[in-house]
Length: 159
Length: 159
Image (cartoon, rainbow over the protein chains, first blue to last red):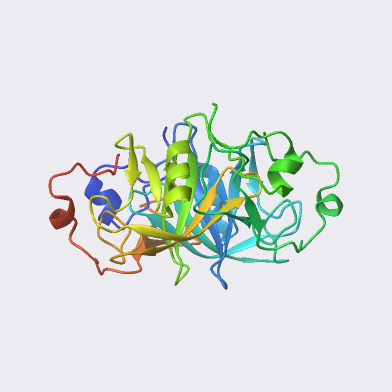
């Protein structure tokens, strides 16, 4: 798929070069990993299409592509919880970006938690045996009330 | 696709429950974000199929699905750079996992760098204009020599 970034011409260019030549997948998306610039905490993993990446670079505010809503998503447009990008990194083969952000309001998760990652998987347990593998909550404190912020908007979580 | 983990029965169960009910995509994969347990640095983003996730949980060592090689990938099996998982987290809608790892040997990138993320994108620049968007190297120090470690194995980077 054509996009507005540099063409990918060689492995050396992609891995060791100094120009942005991102690889979008068959759906035109690239995964984006977002961590808190101050604490290093993983806040969320989203996806960007070419436009979302372009706008993120131009504005310094995180934009994603919402797969559940199928729209360009300026993070915080509804909730006010805008992510200011302090550093944007790209990986070796340029098929993933890493955003370090400051979050106005301190939350990034639609469930109301600070981070989308609030449960720990118990290691050393067998799947497929009796009972499910257990999750342990690492926080139970919600930073905001999703019902107050999102109202009746559909929940993005899909089964 | 059937897998050995708990079935996903409701949004409440998935978001607020205490059982692991991961969602794999149409290819049977879930993205895995891997950070250094000591420094918080983002090391890599990979993918797991159900078997890779199960083995990671059972053994406490990171296993991925290699999309380029189409094989189960016990990270470090070739290079010796095994990732010991100190914490495994899952996100709100359980379609992404976060591994915090200790890396024997201190590197996670097939190019030889400590992290796959060694280049910073210049913010505030316009795509689609004259010239490419520039990348700035944040490190130039390679931790190992890929040719010595991988020999003539094909480079996983795809154009």
